[in-house]
Image 1 (cartoon, rainbow, N blue to C red):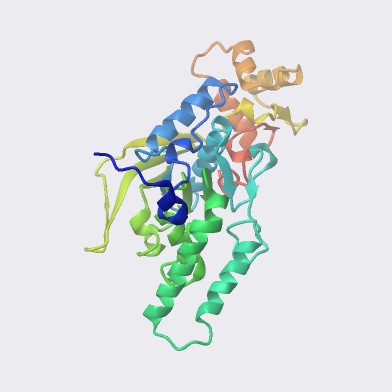
Image 2 (image 1 turned 180 degrees about the vertical axis):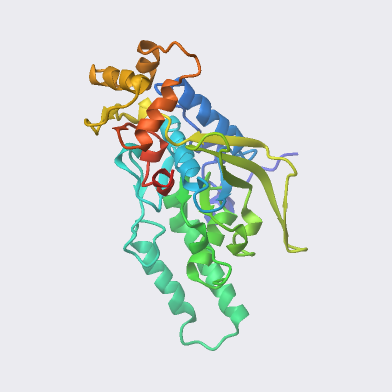
Length: 352
């Protein structure tokens, strides 16, 4: 038989029950169908790939690889795709992109803790330091107090800052360095990782060596590892192999799925018309071969999108590609246009 609480008891004990709105009332993924079909298709691919049941787009994905293997190219591309397709997701970054990227929430790099643009975080971390300053306690007691302070911050202010967001962090090791296990930023990020599903928070972090990450606040919470490589047959292409990640803290070792779940392929120099920057000639003195000159003449006549060039310029030999000519001219700084390399200040673009 169902028991109904009496009004007298309910009014006298207002804190005995949870009257907050349920998780079903929280914001859901809203797709911007005004965007191009390929953007929506790409975004839905990443949504289902980085989906943590029963929640939606949330979790921690770490991109690792050698210098110049396209970690930031892939991460910035995925970040931009999610921003374009899911307008209800707040985009937060610790690296300032190019203007082509569009609107986002900026981090304050002048702060000692360049994670959030709110000044209150630095003040809150200073208060955490004061909790253990000048007191005689063991390292274990000090660590417990800092962890509790970080968890309290995440549950209160962090919940407002990070709710329903995509957080992109470059050089992820700076926040969760293995050699700084007791740093306040390490503790704060550990608290964020513990509640990422409740916050509907998806985190993208880039790093060269995943073994540089903290074994307590980072490795156990990684959901996917994306190993980045340069494409073998495309000098401007990069491939991210997505593996399901697990850290066995008992044995102290990393365990991953034997085969990648899928791959993320990004051509950094392929024109993206949706970025809004038309194809423009920046070196008028260049005289190319016959095929290049046909493309340059078409651009000078007013054709400024990749799609229109494919329609208007035809070659007798099928192996000649408009895309390969455009990329050659772009890399050699004859023309410019919107592409993945132009979303941020790419080091990979200058090394090709």
